[in-house]
Image 1 (cartoon, rainbow, N blue to C red):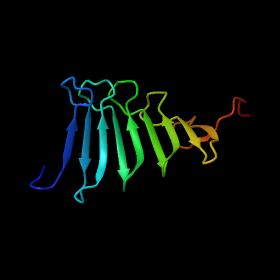
Image 2 (image 1 turned 90 degrees about the vertical axis):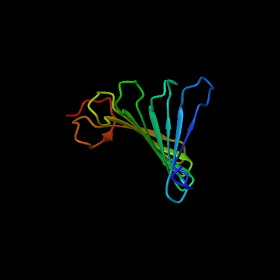
Image 3 (image 1 turned 120 degrees about the horizontal axis):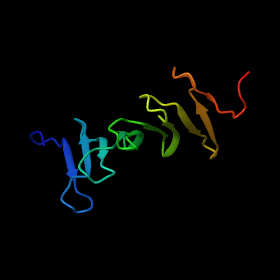
Image 4 (image 1 turned 30 degrees about the horizontal axis):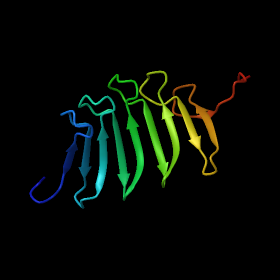
Length: 125
């Protein structure tokens, strides 16, 4: 609390005595972001960002090395894309883009320059 203003709530969801969920609130008392400990070790490995009452995006350290390697974006209640750093270079090199119709396509950043192209297992000529 900051006076009468709610700033953060810490929760132990499984009752083991270790905080595994952190909720952060904006000045208008709306939920701004949530930190989660996937390993239940008190360390935040996933952060979810909210706009209004909806999840807008999330970042995650999926392999536990302390670096973000997974980025999710949402369109309303729908997962729109998941980007992955499979090369451990600090930025995404693979991206799954989901259509509103349930379709999915894989895109790859082969050069590491942030430009994604549709995946093809046919070598470029």
